[in-house]
Length: 316
Figure 1 (cartoon, rainbow, N blue to C red):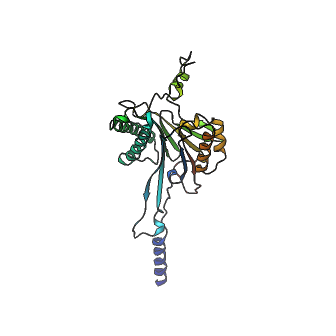
Figure 2: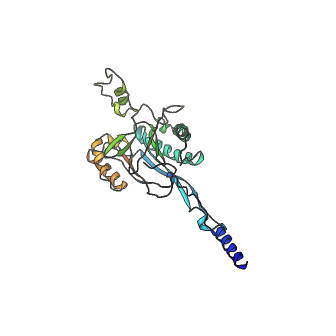
Figure 3: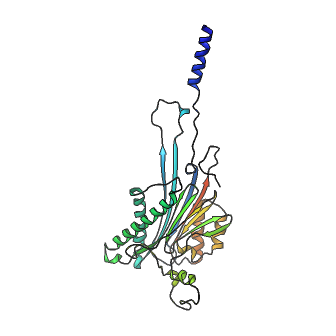
């Protein structure tokens, strides 16, 4: 009998001590990495740089501070992130545009804290929420630029182009106003994500004869949508694409694309140096071509870390 009781006690203790069968959850937002580089240059012809850029990491974390549970019963310290990249090009006489682009990006950073619902994981309803939030942010930024332009009569008329991207897991959202730009570099191809809001682009989009043909107007630099230009805000272009691991994202001002051809930009990105190095190379290319405008470049390398743990969405 004593032997049976001893065996029963051992079996009971074995059951109690058995490790918990815990399903480890690892969403894509926790294994995505973004390596970012940026450069901005005044160019050769202008005295002031009216461009600005911003890169932000937004996240959620869980750290166990105290517990009576065994370590194997608990998840490891957990972090998941979304990423936002922004480039703004200030518009206005006598370099007041530098104030406009500064106000725009500063407002964006503060809005992310004040109103940010940081959707770093996407469900069926999330894309619509992110698009709605982007529209709201652009309207608030538009108001911030307008309010700043009223602070002093010398700031009257200032405005800004702005392109932003938000990355959550494998999803990239981009929002765009003006003639700043966003590109995706994938498998050797440079893909335009944004379309310029300029008189030149409007003319190209119109069928039939081109009314500006032969005109001396610099239609490529006449911006038709911008932040701060009108009450109620601009018409914001917002789109959504899926990313692949090893994609490269490029944001820039027209100081690069006006003088450096797409093929040349793609040649630089294809070398896959550190993003900071490639940003500098692209700036140098624009300067070598005359650098008539401010040049700002942001390059981000997107990758998904290999993982044997379950992820909520299949990795492309």
